[in-house]
Image (cartoon, rainbow, N blue to C red; front, side, top):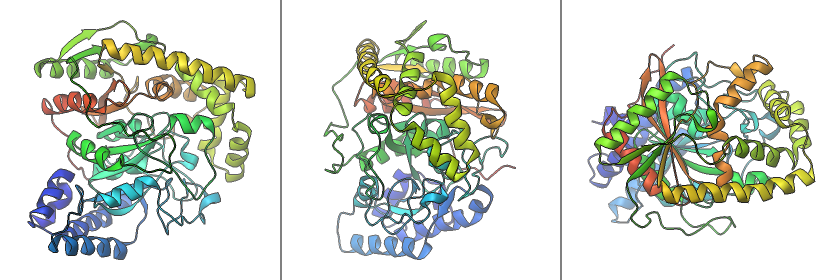
Length: 467
């Protein structure tokens, strides 16, 4: 069995280690061997220290031998993204400007993973500044999608999703401000959860405080190959940490809710491709087979308005500094992303920021009220199947096409609601999936619906990289 540990779910690995079927060291060795086998082709993990990984695993084994409770992830190999602090490692965020920003302390996410007993195998790649849905940068290089090298692995958690899809680790940490967990999961054919704002504590002592837009829309969450592992990862990540003033001690399970799902294939008139529409209809049928009531909807609360308001929040607070940093870095993707956003809404200043914050309350209220009528929403993750690599660099029209397709990713963070991308299969060499949305702190409803969709299909399994 030890040769194939890397193929197992995190839940199975934790169970076998607890039962002493195999050791944490053997699980770590299997993860490192898989990393050595496929990472040279993928460049998903960009910083790792095998000796420290094995030392951590050995310490877990020793503690278990003493009868200690090491946590629900005891010995499970995971990865974390290079944009959060891990003591002794550089919090690069994919830029040369931060290559020497060595963290002195762990972020809350890292601390909570360690408290849960996880073994951090390595740190995963991100586009420069985590600005794109494509993962490439001048410091670490390009990450490849293991299912099809011609496709983006997504971004900004492209390294995390690529690693999980290829069997490097069992749960990956990602961050999401406009789809950076959900889109890589979608593009690589795995699952990804963007939790509610306040569910997972976040803080990087190595850098300055984030601007207000980032504070109220960016979150950390898990990427995994099974919904059960998403559930396990969320429980581990969501522990208390007083360093995050936005963290909320909300229970992981809420009161009973009707098994009612609203299905919207074309929110705000989205030009949803036939393949994505078919995946949504298929997911709806899987939910019906599992006893859920599915009601088809023509439209939703405002989504495009939420997208525009989200951009103003980014641009109205520190946009010029972001442009200066991108130009100093010389990263074409970051420069194109910032220019594309400016092209969509023009300039924004302090008065626009104030209006956007006011508008956010109105939009968040409308969406929260919607979830009282429909506890779960089924909608596109993206209007298109995963994009070809670097599509966003092919000129203004291509960038506008990418942006338009991603509106289901961009608008929802403004509301504070949780959303889950569930992989549902393949269309040729391209993964396809769907997005589920629920009320604030009702990730439990997303996971229940996600498990129903997964159970009536074929769960993702680790793949060898495809050229």
